[in-house]
Each structure stands twice: as C-alpha cells, then as structure tokens.
Amino acid sequence: MKKIASLPLNKQKDTTRPKVFGVSLLELQQQGLSKNGIPIVVRNIVEYLTQHGMTQEGLFRVNGSMKMVEQLRLQYERGEEVELVKDGDVYSAASLLKLFLRELPDGIISSALQPKFIQLYQDARNDIQKESNLKELLKELPEAHYCLLKYLCQFLIKVAEHHVENRMNLCNLATVFGPNCFQVFCEEKI
Image (cartoon, rainbow, N blue to C red):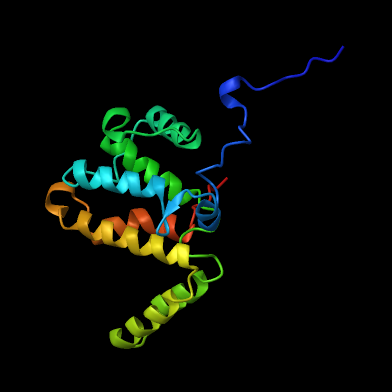
C-alpha cells in the first residue's frame, strides 16, 4: 500500500480564501481586497508605519524578523484582522510591505512599460520635456498600478521628510523600492 504524503494542516492551501500575496492588483480588486485601488494590506502597513515608524533609523533598510513577517503574511492570507501595533513591529511591517511589492506578478510598473520608463530616464532631453513625457507614460499604467504607485510615492515622500532621523532620503528610498516597483532582481553568479 502506498503512503500518501500530505502537508501539515498549516501548510495546506486553503482554496476557499482568496490569496493576498503574489496575485495581481486587478485580482485583488476583483476579490474586494482593495479600496480605491490600494490593496488593504498596503494601506494597513502604510498607516501603521506613518504612525509608528517615520523616525525609526534604518526604516526599510533594517530587516524585520523573518518569523514575524511570515506570521503576519499568514494572518493576511487567512483573512484575519491584523493589528500591527499588537502583532508586529516597525521593521517587520516594513519588510512585509517590500515582500508584498516584490511578489506582485507584474510589479507596480508593468513589464510591458518598463522599457519605456527606462528609455525616458536615459533620454537626454531637458527636464521639462521629460516631466511631460513621464506624465503621459504614467497614464498608460493600468489604473490599479497607477493608484498604488501614487499612494506609495506620497507615503515615501513623507518618509523622506524624516530623513534626518530615519536616514532614508529619496535616494536611499529609490534604492530600496526601485527594484520592487520594476521587478528587478539580481541573479546570483555561479
């Protein structure tokens, strides 16, 4: 008789509950897991960090506890109400936000538009023309992607306003969030 291996109960997939991580922004909207184009998980994390993390040195650079990040992720995936004040900490919440963005199937800047954004960045035209072209290019983003990008940028500007305390100026924030927004991953050399 064959033995059938099964996953422990906490590792089995729950097909009745919609996923939160690793699904498209459109899918999150369709499942009612977004409000005004912003995924609820992102809104919760940003609100928590705005209240509790703006002056934390190394915000987004210091990694949170992997165990806590995974516990928070599982709570969101199970549809549980997550109270970051009680269940998390600033660095774990920041790590969870980066994880969510990193796991978006097509990133915030969709792969189809990435070459256009890179070309615009490399363009030698004056700043006024670049700004105009950027505004036009942003209009090409799917609505859910545009809403999330706008929300994230507004939040990151607030984070940068506290750069003296948190050491996260716009350049540092771009270094951390650029790869997550553009789905740029470094490959390991063998």
